[in-house]
Amino acid sequence: MHGELKFADLEAARRDLENRTLAKIEGDFARLIYLASMRDYNTGEYHHEGLACQFTETLARRVLAATHRDVFRRLVLCSVEELVEQLDSYVRSNGSTLSDFVRVWEKLQPYTVTVPLDSSPLTARFFALNVRAALAVLERRQARPLPDPRSASPRP
Image (cartoon, rainbow, N blue to C red; front, side, top):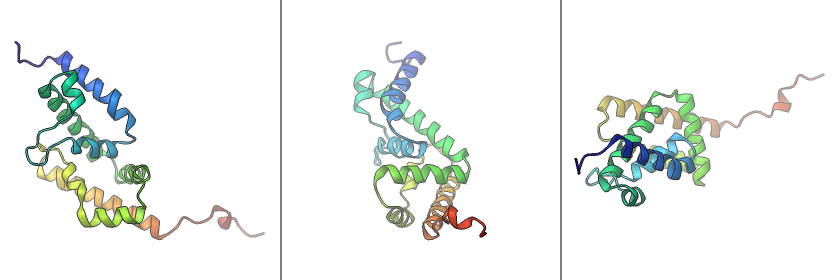
């Protein structure tokens, strides 16, 4: 029983992560980026010093992995329109210009490393295609400024 993880501990760690960290990050896309960054790209293991100190390393890893899966699942299930809004919010929050963001993300495709390890290849591909579609919408919006509402008024 000593090494066994208890449901109450998992829930406490999840609430801690939600309240202390994720609540300060606007939008699921930004949360996905953050959670993926907690994963070591060489081992696939998650690390979060605060959670590990408060709970245990094992518990922190499990909670990070589960939360990462949950956020990813929500984004996979949202519409492309919702994903466009998530990306737009993410761009505005990180201080880069939309044109630079779209250019770099189309070239490097960093969203591919945000996929949880246990996701199916089909789900990962679906997500990547949706992100690429959302990037195309953002790029199109930038290329074609929204019309001035005053110019749409009928002439007397």
